[in-house]
Image 1 (cartoon, rainbow, N blue to C red):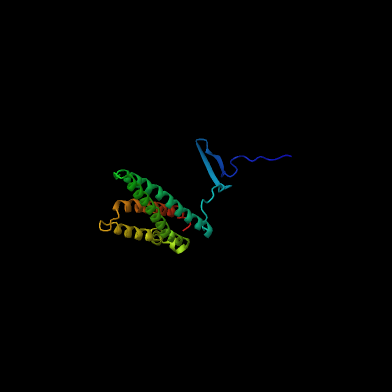
Image 2 (image 1 turned 90 degrees about the horizontal axis):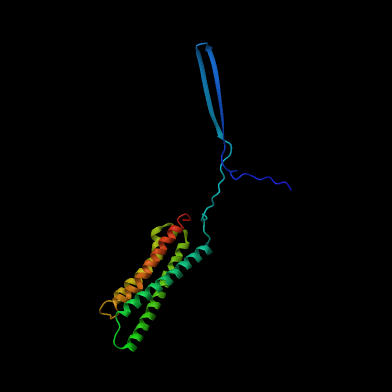
Length: 197
């Protein structure tokens, strides 16, 4: 079977160039030489070999899966950072009674995990970004990501005043990593879907 191979640059543009030189002898002492060079239009145009990275529209299941992934990543990352911070802070605050310290440490870890679960559930408003109107407005999109977690953070910090007895550093080590992580995911979301919006 005889197959014809195409060269590698079949899509590149080719330009046809025509040149001519004419010589006119007016008399024996004067010679007029005219050089005319013209360029024709492109015979072929280069092929479009790129593809669009994101479609112009995103379907609902894809967006729902992406936003759920954001929530799970935010919970996992903030949980790891919170547990690391609490471990570092609690090592410095060891008491003489190890049994009491062990029970208090376990309680603090349990409280921090439950607070992070509450913050993650309060962040379920990110699903408002499935609506095109909310996604189009950067302020509404930001509020969908962070409004309820900020309110929960303010309430926790107000509860951790010296009057209530809940240590301020525990509230900060639980809520601040979550807010930083959800803020990072918000900016990543805006950067990823700026073409779709």
